[in-house]
Amino acid sequence: KGNGGQLRQVENIDKKFNLKKLPSPLNELTVSASSNVDSFPVWQDVKIFISSTFLDMESERNLLHQFVLPQLQRKAATRFVNIDFIDLRWGLSEEQINTKGQVELCLEQIKRCDLFIGILGERYGSIPQDELLKELPPEYEDFVKEVENDGLSMTQLEMEYGVLQNAEASRNRAFFFFRNSDFIEDLNEEEYKKYTSEDRLKFLLLKHRIRNSNLEVME
Image 1 (cartoon, helix red, strand yellow):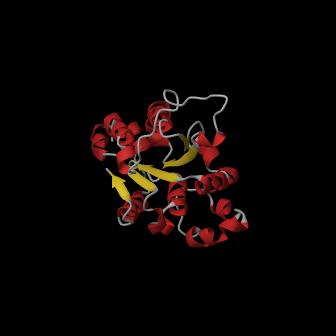
Image 2: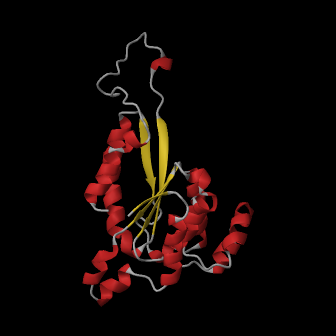
Image 3: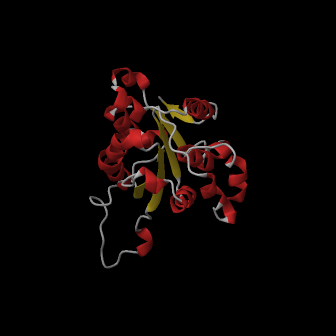
């Protein structure tokens, strides 16, 4: 979606989750010598994992971090909630992402996050070497057995581990966004290679799997 669609998601997040409007911590909170510490609001930390392909989503990630996140943080602060995005693609090269340390870090960060957002355009994403999965710590052994022979991209590995292998449990914490593909018709040859994937079948199967998960998909 464009900027307007993302901003509407931010503006309507309180309605979506039935959040009650609380008094502003700056305008209505007063402190005196006799104030009881128990009367202060308890702030809640909410971490949101952002999963997307690398080459084609740079602009979207910049928009999320530089424009959407600050707006969401200001809105959440009125309800005493700290919002933070965990986006391990931001500021890294594609080569840095496909390393043993980064694969393990992605899975570890997914476990620590409260919400999961998946964003797909027309690329499937780079596929890490099999050895990187087999060398993961024992705690990921069951997951590795499920996916080690499938040749999945790093993006799909994140989506499988974070959401799709237990979609029912993720129903109210995972959301997917699919980019409108109409713009591809106007791309030159170099741009087309950047925004599309040679692994077309795997890409289409991933989108089909997400749509059939009964999770919320916006496209």
